[in-house]
Length: 103
Length: 168
Image 1 (cartoon, rainbow over the protein chains, first blue to last red):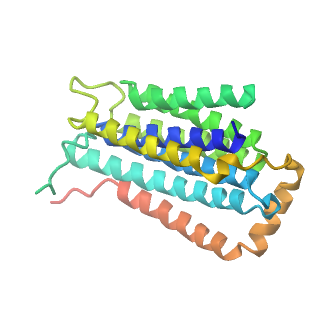
Image 2: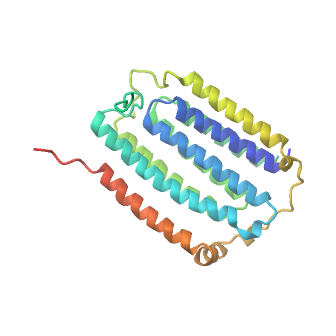
Image 3: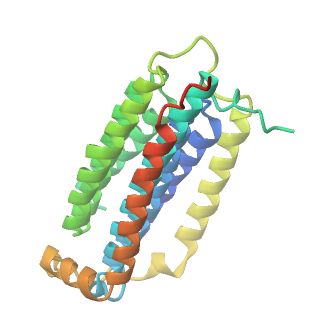
């Protein structure tokens, strides 16, 4: 198998695992972990395409991943702060129980 | 496909599945750290040294620890008596499987899969000095915007997580 294809398949599998976790788990922290896994799958795609792309000297893929890592860190910090805030208010981190806005 | 890639891929996939299925949240966070380490190894294998080390530094060093702190602060380390998966779990797994089927079909049937692998890229061309040069010249505006974003996110996280004042 082409090495690029195997990296892309690994990334697709990681994305699907993260998606399954984010859709099925009831704890908000685990939903956030699933989103982190999906972000990392996207980063792996960027690195694989950079390495096997036509012009790796330009360093575009890796630079994009650096920015993506920084944004993911900011997202994790704000997301966990929101979860802690929700826990203070509702005394739970279960996403099924936080349904005040549900119609 | 080399043996090192097979080992790293197995490590990443198994630990990711464990992180999403285990009952104890602290175990989940530790499995997530293993996933991040495996991904950092994959980046190193692809010749992206700086990103691999940044991955270890940011994800294993900061995000995983942050998640452990959040688990401790919300006292959800011990699994509760109820179910761990939502009522629509089967549908969620089905959606994820469908997404993987579509992605796999597209990847294996695309022209990229048939293209021969390019010659081995010299990893020494992607040095930290090159990165710094690019960040300080071509990408200076995104870098500054990102710095602003990180500052705003840090202040925002502190304000959100601040204890609300008791109303008299």
